[in-house]
Image 1: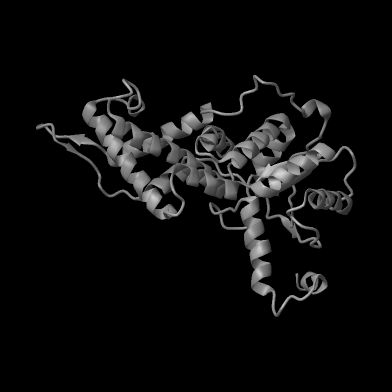
Image 2: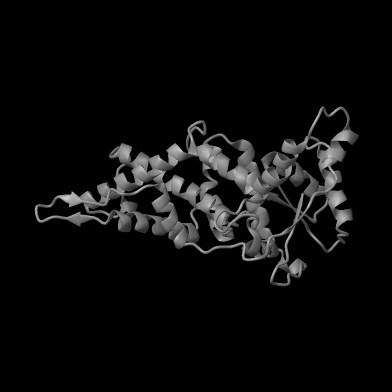
Length: 323
């Protein structure tokens, strides 16, 4: 499936637009943009809780808070992307196996032929983590391939790195709000800044520190998800960059490798980042509910095909005809 969008700017893919990377190139960690976002979320909790101290020094606060209220307030303080018309969607002839490196490479050459790409044009392909790793191998054979790691699948794996994904997202969001309220109350009572909670001796206040880190990393995940829904590329990138060190800690080795490659690609190709400023997600839904590339593929491609294939598929030709 191909999404064709018209950008409001002209992008000239020149060699000088490629940044050379080395061992000192920063790829991971809490970026300035993510720190700003974290501070925004902290301020939102603080403001909505509306703390008041009585003359008898009893602390009162607003108890009418839930996920929707917090999320709505966060979105109002974020910039929307996808400020371009909906894309033209093209479904190409299905071919090959996604489990074969050579077949994946052949598919990239099919795209090259279909779109008449010359040696100065790049082929940007988005895929889930499994196919992304195979595209990295194809990139070694054809340097004009720029693999893009699907952020919908990445978001699910980010959440799985925090807790067991068998728990529902809804419950985890409720826990996040409850934790945010609790640690802000704690900071208010102790008369400290919330950022001071993880400081101090490591053998003290272990429980509150553990919940603080849950709140912090869940905020990063939530920011990444919101970045997808509103098409904000900077928010997606900053969240993934801040969250990335957690993948190896939780034993997600494949995602660790893929995220390293993906962040390297973003850092290397400046024009790819310029494109993402306009189409980090797909404008195929109402504002604030934009799907990621791989989510759109699953919803409008694979999901649609599964729902509309009828009868018994007895051969490849019959399957292709129905698709």
